[in-house]
Length: 501
Image (cartoon, rainbow, N blue to C red):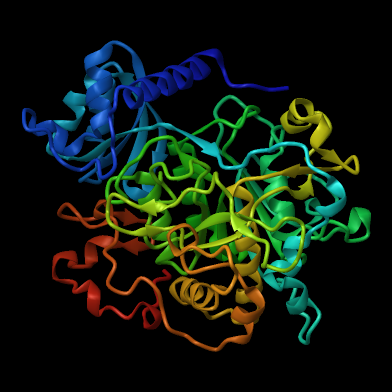
C-alpha cells in the first residue's frame, strides 16, 4: 500500500494541529476578510496564518498564494523565503507552496500578491454511523426522491449521456460503477495508485449512479447510466489539502468538454470557516459554475456549527441530510442531527435543500479498504457498505442533477439549482426551512416541471475572481477582458449568457 512521504504527512499533521489549536483558542474565521488593525499585510493574509506565524514562525506550513500578475516573481520570492512551490493552480492564477510560517507575512506584504490562505486539510463528509437493522435499508431513498418513476416512464431517463466528476478518494472497479469510469486523474502527492484505498469515493459513486448489476439491482443508484470521471484527491486515510481539490477542479475545467462533464460532486469540506470571497476552493468552483458545470457539495456534518468551504459558496448546490428511516414515504423523515445548517458569514442561508443521507447502502471499494477494515460490521452483502453523512445526501442530489440534465441538456447550472429548489417537497411533517432550505429533493417533479427561471441572480462572484488590474486569466476564460467594476451583477441574466469558452 502506497502512502505519502513522511515529511508530507508530518506537514499535514502539524497543519491540522495548528488549525485546531487556533480554533480551540476561540479564533472564529467566518468572513475572514477584515484586516487586522495593526498590520497592513493581513489585508491579503488569512488570519489563521498570522496566528500560526506568531505561535511558531519556523514551522513549515502549506499555503495557497493568489497573484495579481502573470509572471513568476512571487514564486521566485517563495524560494528566497526558504519555501518551495508545490502545485500550479492556474485556474485561479495561484500556486501552492510550503514555507516557514513566519514568512507567510512577508509574502502577503508584496504588492503583486492578491491573497495568501492556509492550505488546510479537507475532510470527507460521511460517517459510517452506528449499526442498524439492514433489512430495512435497501435503497428506500430511490423512491423517496422519485427517481424510480423517472426511470420507468418514457423516455426511461437513467442519466445516459451525462458524465459526473467525483472529486474524492477515487472510484474503484466495483462492478456497479467501475465499467463506466471514462477517465481517471490523481492529485495526491506520494501516492502512485489510482485505486480507492479509502472507499469513500466508491460509496459516493454508487449512490450517484451504481447500476446494481452485481446483485440484480438491489443497490441501484440514482442515475444508473451516467459515466464517471474519477479524480483522486484523498490519500489512504481520507486526507487531502485544499490545493489538491483546486488542482482537481482545474483538471475538470481543462477536460470537461472532452468527457462531457456536466456535474461535479464534492462530498467534502474544509476544516476552517472562511468567506467565499477569500476561499480558493470556492473561487475555483465558481469558474466551473460559470462554464455551465453544476457543482454539488455536502453541507457538512457539524450540525449548527460554521459552514465551511465549499458548502458556504452561494452559487453551488449545498445539500443537507435527512433520515428516510428506510421507508419511501416522507411522513417519518427528519433532518439528521449532524446535518450542518445556518447562515454563512456572507449572509447566505444554507443548505439549499436536503436529501436522504442516513444509513444508505452503496458500493464498497474492496475488502482491504479503510472502511472495510475499520468498520467490518457495516459491510453488507460482502461488496457493499452502510454509511451516513451529508456526503451521501450530496451524492444522491448529484445523481438527480444528472437525471435532470439528461432530460434537458441545455439547462444552465442556475436553472438546475432553481428547478431543484422550486420543486423541493415542503409538505413533510419534519420540514424546517432553517435546517432543510427549500425542502426535500423531488427529482420526479423537477423533471416534469418546465420552468427555466434561474437562481443566483444578483449574487456577486468571489472577490478572488474580480479584484486586481487583470482579474483571473484562466486559459480560455479571459477574465481581464471584463470590466468587473462596471458590471451590474443584479442585472445580469445568467440563463441567457453562455459562460463557456
